[in-house]
Image 1: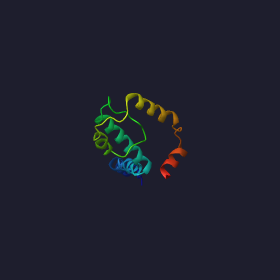
Image 2 (image 1 turned 90 degrees about the vertical axis):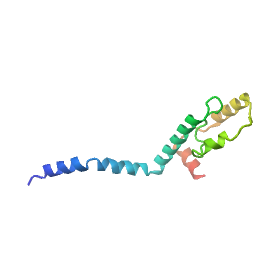
Image 3 (image 1 turned 90 degrees about the horizontal axis):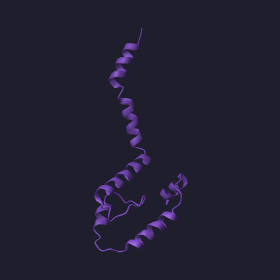
Image 4 (image 1 turned 120 degrees about the vertical axis):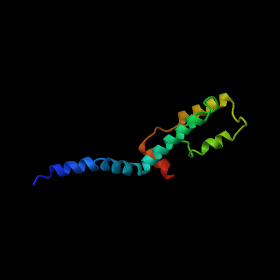
Length: 108
């Protein structure tokens, strides 16, 4: 008995199920959840914060609620030159990104 027509019909009916299961499994991984969360935070910050006032620093996020927190401050704390010096100091003293650095950051 030839099962090829039966298998072909089952594949055409349920062929979308295997990629869907793989995608759901991938989305449940903690690493993927973290990457999606970081992307969403950066995206919302890009959309909602004034680019003339606020400067982006990556990997310093507390979730999407931080935008409201940042906007709640009205008084200027640092001058433009102080902000430039702080950003320069942060960028030059930053360790090179690696898997070991990421593990160390996550564990602490």
